[in-house]
Image (cartoon, rainbow, N blue to C red; front, top):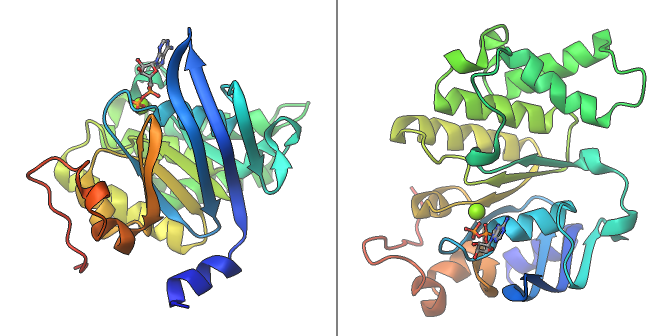
Length: 257
Ligand SMILES: Nc1ncnc2c1ncn2[C@@H]1O[C@H](COP(=O)(O)OP(=O)(O)O)[C@@H](O)[C@H]1O
Ligand SMILES: [Mg+2]
C-alpha cells in the first residue's frame, strides 16, 4: 500500500456526496456525483464555466437541495446536520455584499459570528478576541478599523475569509477566491491559504487557476456535469483523461517547486 492511501484511510471522512443528481427547470446540471472529502484535504474543484461547480458547493452547504442523492457531513445526513459553524464558506465574488457599504473590516468579520449566535446578539470580550484571531490568521490585523471599500480586492478577499473562519470551522469552502486579484497578490493569498491548511483546516476550493493546482493542493476533482476525475494531485498529473480538461497552454508537472 502506498503512503498516500495509508494516510487516506486513517483520515476521517468529513463530507460524503452519494449519487447526487441536480436539475434546474428539467435541465440536468449534476449527474450522479460521488465525492468524499477527508480531513486534511486541500481539494481543488476544476471544470469549465457552467460545469456545476458552484451548484455542487451549494448542495454540500445545504443551500440547494438535490432531487436525488445524499449528502453526509461527519456521518450525519445534511438535513439533520445542525453544526453549521463547522463549515466556512466564501461565495463567488459576484454574490458578495456591496463592498461600498460603509462597514469596516472587523465588522465584516463580526457578521460571521452573528450567524452562529443565539440571542442576545451582542459581542463579548471572547468574541472580540475571536475576531482578532481570525484577522491575524489572514494577515489583516492592522487593517481591522479600515473601511472595506478602501481595501484592495485581495485584501477584501482576506477579510471575507476571516469572516468565514471566525467560528473555527473544520472545512473552508472557497468559490473562485482569486478572481480579479492581481498575480502577486494571488501568490500571497495562496500562501496564506496554505498556512491555514497547515494549521489543520480542510480546504475545498473551486478554481480556474491550474497553476495553483500544481503548487498547493493534494486532491483534485474535475467536474463537467459528471465527476470526470477525482484523485490525488499525483494521479491527476498522470491521468490523460484529466489532462484533456486542461487548456493547451497549461501543462502540469508532477514535481513541485
Ligand atoms: N440561478 C440560476 N438559475 C438558472 N440557472 C442557473 C442558475 N445558477 C446556475 N445556473 C445554471 O446551472 C449551470 C451550472 O452553474 P454553476 O453551478 O454556477 O456552474 P459553475 O460554477 O461551474 O460555472 C449552468 O448552466 C448555469 O447557467
Ligand atoms: Mg461558479
